[in-house]
Length: 185
Figure 1 (cartoon, one colour):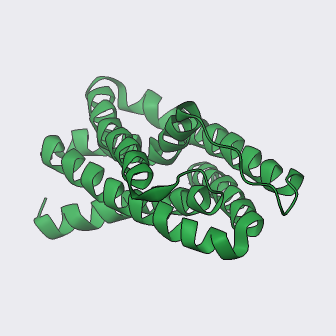
Figure 2: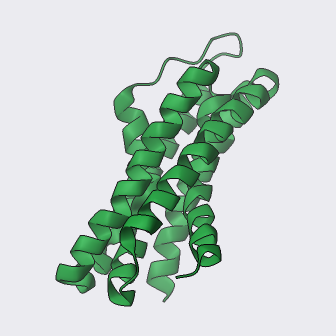
């Protein structure tokens, strides 16, 4: 793969993490640059590891992984998105958003990176340099997620609950889109 192709792949794999980070930042789940970098590091690490897992699984059993990856992504993104949406609707305008757990951050990162696992399966069939590609995806995701947290935080100061609700709807939508794309062919 050329560097341009790897770059395009890395950005495309990072967009969903960026959207999820916007919602998390708007909901007030991460405060400050250090927290944004921490969240970015979690998203980036998960996004870097999942294509490696996919590549390994692709070498072993590509048909099985492709058969269930869309359901896993749909379930994880749908559950996290629904939780965000319900929190936004239940909270009064004056209430601060509750702090999120490391577990919720990791689950969101996993949900947004299932597609990277599927890409890893495909890369196993292409005999591509998976280490370079996984590193590019991980670093790009880290930068985009940290940026999303900071941008979401700025938006959240003005639009708070609405941004959190939109972030939840975006995650549900991403999960539904992944499921639809796989089921529609």
